[in-house]
Amino acid sequence: MRSIQFLFPGACLFAACASYCQPYDIVVKGGHVIDPKSGVYEVRDVAIRDGKIVSIADRIETSGSKQIIDAKGLYVTPGLIDIHSHNFPDMRTGDPFPDHFTFRNGTTTTIDAGSSGWRSFPELKRTIIDRSETRVLAWLNIAGEGYRGGAYEQDTSDMNAKLTASVARLYSEHIVGIKVAHFEGREWTPIDRAVAAGKNANNIPVMIDFGSSTPPLPLEELYNKHLRPGDVYTHCFGGIRNKEGGGREAIVEDGKLRPFVPAAQKRGIVFDVGFGTTSFSFACAVPALKSGFHPNSISTDMNRHSFNAPMQNILNVMSTFMAMGMDLKDVITATTWNSAKIIKREELGNLSPGSCADVAIFNLREGKFGFYDRDGQRIEGSNRLECEVTIREGKVVYDLNGIAMPIIIPGHRRY
Image (tube, rainbow, N blue to C red; front, top):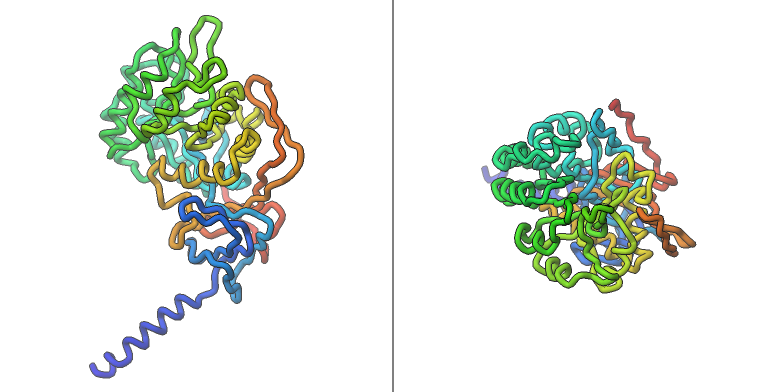
């Protein structure tokens, strides 16, 4: 017994040293780190081991490391979180498989925004979530079938708060909130039932695509009487009227931000971009940003139509906002740490030691670039973000120019 007591402290010290002295899986050298959670905005090395961030420091020893990435002149950020996308490639939507558009743009987490409801979510999980290398989460549609189109999305009798909440609780690992979309009626039923479902599913947020009605339902009433702090208003720079006088209101009127909008944001209503195919207008966004109003989160509304339209990809949307005056730190915050907090997944969207090693490395190209909106309006900017490397759970999954050395080709997957 005496011998064991004598040796035990030494054994612990040896084990601790062995763990500390293990070579790293990846060391990212000399990149400009942007980590909004920790407030690190300077050149640092980043070390990764066993799928986790191990250290961020001025200089990290690379001896024995499996891969080294020379990130000098590049920006190193948490993997991007796109809180509004569509990833259900079945006969109804034909939307793209997430891995086809995420990693090449620095996105490591994407949230499907209501493509499925309480009836169809198990299919989304089986066909997409369980088969993707990208982390795929979901907003659960208050409509039982999700995005099935037509009368299915107008049927309030199929908007069951109890069943929606039950499925959200059952799949809480994957479902981050409740979605309302495409409703054309002049009633608040879908929104109120979604909020009720969110409350009953451990108080998760709702995301509102306000749909359209004739005449439009008032935004001010939506923000102040129906939504809670933490609930999300997506397509915030949209707003469109049809020739019959219907549609949805914009947050800008006569070229000025409506005063109840910043008041709602201050109260805790979350404003999300959801760029999409027809949901972003410079006529709305430019005056809003000039007044000092910035979106809480920048997202794509990625779908089979939008990625060949003005949206293109999340980096193009981020670059568009930089062209309108947001700085690089702000657009990174709006696609990483802010997004993680909105979906209540604060283990994501940061580079803190011990966090999941989801990392994006960007080049900020300089030149003359054009960005355009749904109305064909165009602005120019002097910078465009380009993804160099994406790391998902400590493995390089995308490498534009082969700068992760030695080069390790990811294994092929069968989809």
